Amino acid sequence: MLQPRTICATVVLLGATLVTAAGPAVAAPAAAPAAATVCPTGWGSTGKAATAATSESVRNVRTGRNDCYDRMVVDVPGAARGDLGYSVRYVDRLHQDGSGRHIPVSGGAILEVRVTAPAYDPGTGAATYPARSGRPLPGVDLTGYRTFRDARFAGSFEGDTQLGLGVRGRLPFRVLQLDGRLVIDVAHNWTGAAAR
Image (cartoon, rainbow, N blue to C red; front, top):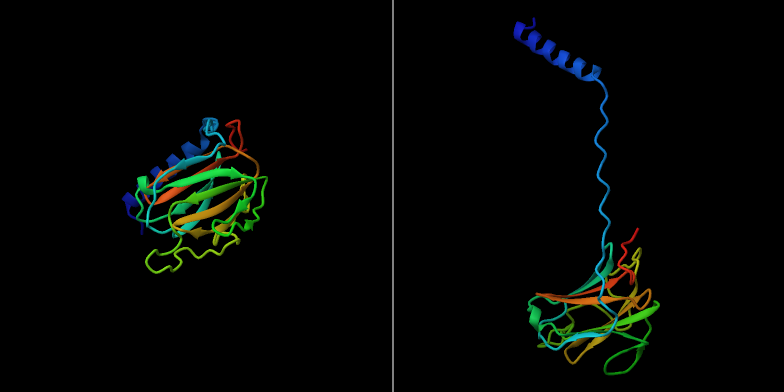
């Protein structure tokens, strides 16, 4: 048998439900239009460099996509921001340090990325990044990227690590030095318009 309190509570809830359902339909407020993404401009395509060096080793290279640019990150754990030297510039062909061997890189333009950090342990010579000269970077899949086309390991010679980044065309780029990593962003275009 139901208690009078239970019956009363049920009737109140049922009544509230009926009043809500019978009320006039009110349109939900229109969602605000999404703000257009404004991409940074002014990076330029001329070479960029910083002189510094570290004995910390390259451990990984990874990539990511953004509305405005494609990103490559070279991980050098333990290296302070000011110790990560680099040279990033467009080249007609990528040539391996030491041997001068040509490393083919696909794309409309080639960015040569040099990081002043070895991809091996300076004490033992053992590789710290499992890449092979002339081969695609391990674990990097560029499927679906707007700007990046290819990423190759050229080698690590006398404390410098050399990579080849194939891009769609000679596009503006920037380089960021952060603690433990070097970041290379290559814009999708020259106009600053975001991807659609």
